[in-house]
Amino acid sequence: MPYTPPEVWTWDAESGGHFANINRPIAGATHDKELPIGRHPLQLYSQGTPNGVKVTVMLEELLALGHTGAEYDAWMIKIGDGPQFGSGFVGVNPNSKIPALVDTEAGVNIFESGSILLYLAEKFGEFLPTDIAQRTETMNWLFWLHGSAPYLGGGFGHFYAYAPEKFEYAINRFSMEAKRQLDVLDRNLAERQFMAGDHYSIADIATAPWYGALVKGLLYNAATFLDVSSYKNVNRWADEVYARPAFQRGRMVNRTHGLEAERLEERHSASDFDRLSQN
Picture 1 (cartoon, rainbow, N blue to C red):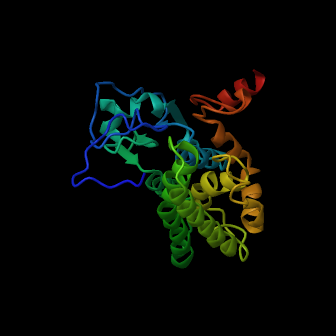
Picture 2: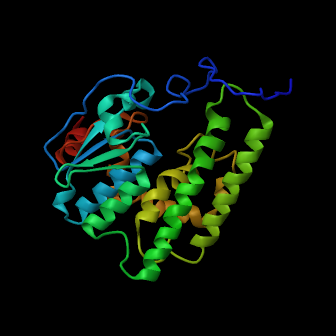
């Protein structure tokens, strides 16, 4: 039957859905719990979702360039269990979303994955050009990603993969938008190696865990449904980015799904990857 919206919306805690147990219309902490702190200056609290992967990839890329100050402790925040509503996490990120980063040396809390990428790029002077035109182009595509990905995740991904019921209108609406975004990317990457030109940047690091994962069949099991093989330039770019050793390491950190040999629940040292490969 058609749905008629009520005059005043009220929260139905039993509405169901994949994330029903953590979705609520209010903010703030639900319980007292301090965050763990490791020995490195950078403390990351995250999970290996596309947004979480952005930051672990960035940190691994910085370490690969020799920036020892980018050593970090990555603590698992299993969002399905609700630790993001603990008082310690809310103190870092009042929005209660992963990832959240604390720079203990600078005394700075950083939340929102795009803000974290920008902070790290400026702190270490990498993956963000200093030339004003190149920097602006990089920022264009970084902001494009953060404006577009919610349509892919909360829109297409939710209604196609997670919603308790399938609705033709919602799936058609967000499938169309997902394909439009892929076409935007494909046209852009037809003329350049990376998102913002011939330089690998935070725009690529932000975008690959979303649209790169989609075309590689790693997101929502939707590659065939959306016919992603038709986006030749996005596929070429995704293959190149995913082949980077630092990108591969970053995808392992705080990961909760996939092969056991590719999951590093917490990361406190580069040697953790060695131990993972020995298991």
